[in-house]
Image (cartoon, rainbow, N blue to C red; front, top):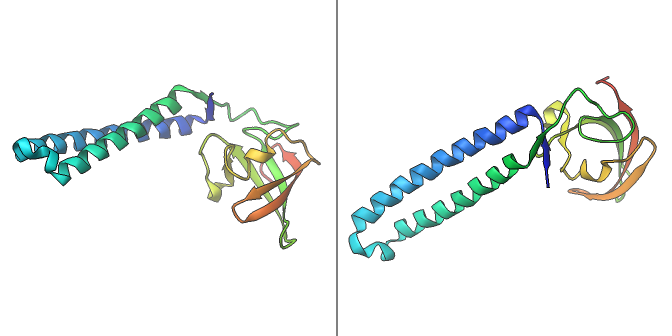
Length: 163
């Protein structure tokens, strides 16, 4: 299943993969030294065992990043959805906390996979707030569970540009 990312999102994934490979190489080098220093008692060496576990964990992280990069589809940021909430859309929302009745209106740009940048008002399409509204049109609403509790999210408008 593909994931959708911006150019910078793909660059970030590749940078993270390079960093993980460097960490992996450092762990392998340290494990080799630990093995050489322990002689035939490596199996009773907690430091060596810990390094083996770190190596296996780093290997899994690398495999996951390679999978994400391999399934990435770069999205065109200039093609804003204007009829439905989609990646690239700027959406005006009303969020009602169903426990307290509090309402808040916010505008967010829906961005690529794990590309949350709250200070820039960008929300990844796979985030708890964006995922349930993908595909909705202005005037539609959805009830969903957010980290703070049950909420009703209403799509007020899709904007061509930031107000």
